[in-house]
Length: 300
Ligand code: PRP
Ligand code: ZN
Image (spheres, rainbow, N blue to C red):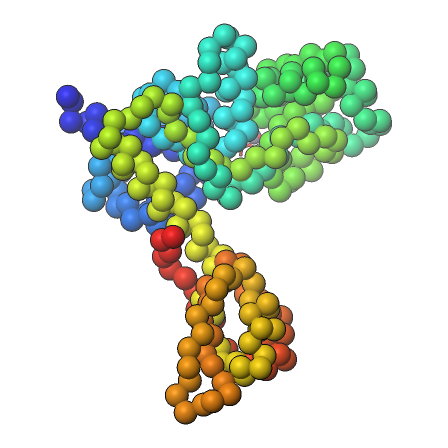
């Protein structure tokens, strides 16, 4: 077998809103990489994993066609390509395995701020510019609306000014693109974020073991993002109340304090951020010597 076949290939967006986060995430999983001269591949140095840097439109296809084993891409793109494949009579060939909690955005319908809008029926017999023809048509169909999807590969927001469409259907994140173009959001079709997709083809034992390891590390990285390790001293009498105040923690460790009969030390991993308010409430409940530490790695 070709030795390169044994390496895991992960498709990642080359330039765009997901790129830095995706690479950062994989680095936090312990992957060290060098970029090829043409900037199209990142070769893993310490693990048999390579990243293919591609356009995000291509990622679901590359994973579906088994060119890549995994991909990191927006749910918007995964769903659009799934609908496109479905329309062509091809089955979906990749599965979603993970939500990554970054790259949050939404696919929305928007129109000029001076156009009166009275719910989805206002879209009847209009033209709607979009790169997401599949998702738009699905929305129109489920709302029984007849409207024309006008395909734009980019710069969708200028379509109304060009007189090519009355509305647009595009990704919105901060909303500044819409604002800059005098457009107002009318309907949200899909809430999206970055996800990991995997090929449905069986990978073989060795490769699957490596994929499982990466997914487990990704899970660890995501879990620690908000997690904090909290240490405090508590009067035994207030222990139950203090436990209840610890955000998102299971079974804290309770330790004896040298030379103290009425106080104990409490250590806990909190799966949510610990705010000043929480510390103040803990203190009011009788806790002292409070210490909050970031969690660097976690393996459940
Ligand atoms: C999307 C979308 C808008 C912009 C919206 O494009 O097409 O142009 O983001 O973001 P905002 O609400 O924060 O202004 P994207 O950056 O994904 O790139 P593309 O249009 O080149 O595909
Ligand atoms: Zn855009």
